[in-house]
Length: 107
Image (cartoon, rainbow, N blue to C red; front, side, top):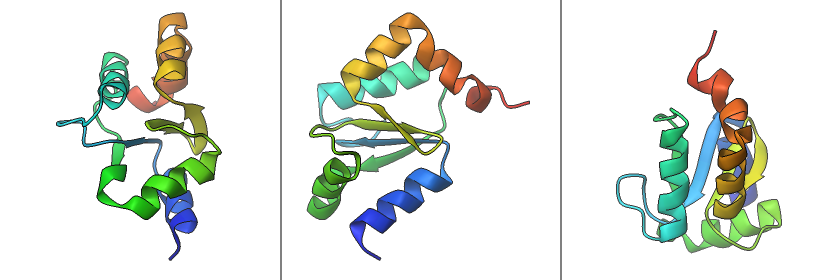
């Protein structure tokens, strides 16, 4: 399976996916740490985190997949949301909480 197919499957099968440097328990960069904290502040403790530092092909592949040059990258319901700055702006406006609400509190 090529990297793009692997990314498509991961993003498609999981409600929330964060491509990040490190893990939620041990983020390897401040931006990744910031997005993990934002997700937790939204009440989301269960999400798929993919450490791009473990695989150089994946690290480049995720940048190509979203046509977005930086990591972390947040995906919700198969859609690219953005990086750390966008996640922070959406959190500040309440938009991210609304987007995550059905995942955090499923009916």
